[in-house]
Image (tube, rainbow, N blue to C red; front, side):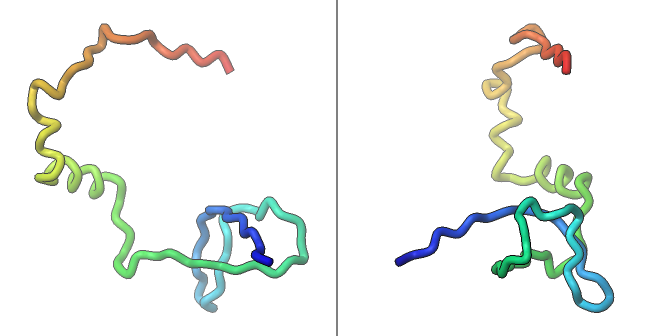
Length: 84
């Protein structure tokens, strides 16, 4: 019999003692055994400005500079007036 697993994505920090500290409380009751997969960049994290700079100069996205790709204007659509 296979067990169904549920995934939760959260952020956290590895502290000086090599322990994971989550940025928020887990939304599941405990105590409970869990499996943890840690994803991290081996390099220092890039700032969002660095990502945007790289994306703007990526030759793969050069087609977006073609005037034929610019099909929308400020006159298109309606403004979103969120009344929340």
